[in-house]
Length: 185
Image (cartoon, rainbow, N blue to C red):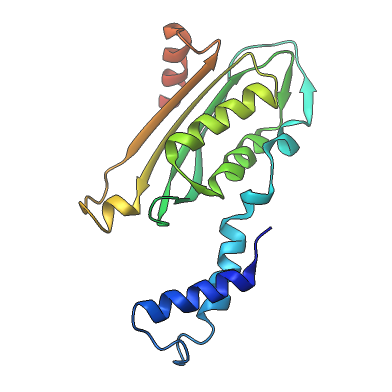
């Protein structure tokens, strides 16, 4: 459960720590604004992908389903700076499919947590296997990390790409190549 009072107190301490006057006109309401923002951007802390992946529809076709270019925003757990990009999510159904919006919602569940991109990629693929019962899953995430672009090495435009394969996608180069070909469409 997100505790807005603790967030507000923490923001006040942070502002004091950098030498700011927390009672200055422009900063008076900043702790409250940040607490409300954190409630929104960390909403995934209180959600589970199972809620989204449990509403399914029976199908006869068990071919790959791919939802690509799912835009997401997340917060790096190392520096608490944003990273953002696109997730490409595919699965092989086992007689049932989920509504396409549910794939985007699954990405959001994991993106709206303090996160590592590598971990998020794995979590999405695992949820497809465990909560949807897919025969295979493949997830590719490409993202720009503000901790790389705004501080440290300062390399704007650099992107990190992570890939996770599970089930029928694992060690199946032909199926993986089909995934990559579909991304180009």
